[in-house]
Image 1 (tube, rainbow, N blue to C red):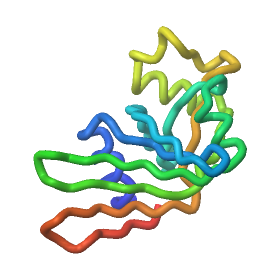
Image 2: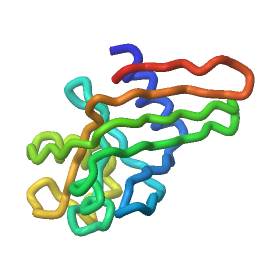
Image 3: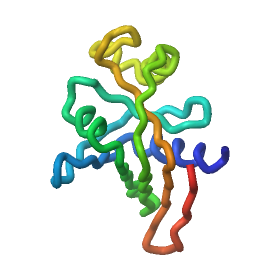
Image 4: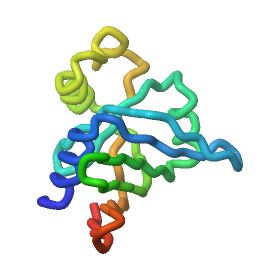
Length: 135
């Protein structure tokens, strides 16, 4: 599990990553900050009422990208985002990101957690060869 832990640590360090989805034939990109390693899977969180949730329901292919300016390294994770409606994973996400508890709770009909499935992470920089990690 060393590779997925490295991915999560990088995302936690950079704090902001950008999630790309597709709406029809138009790419959509927005900043995110939630990340959770749970049961060996990389999770993110959103609200079911948001456009991003609807886009992922139509096409679960997604990619995230984060950049660490101090090291000049960036990370891209691409794969399918699959919904997980279990209360325990929602609670774990909200416990890790308590700032979200004013907008979400594990028992509402809005909180959505998704995990990457069939995903690949690639660490890149201008000074070294890419490092590929299958998640």
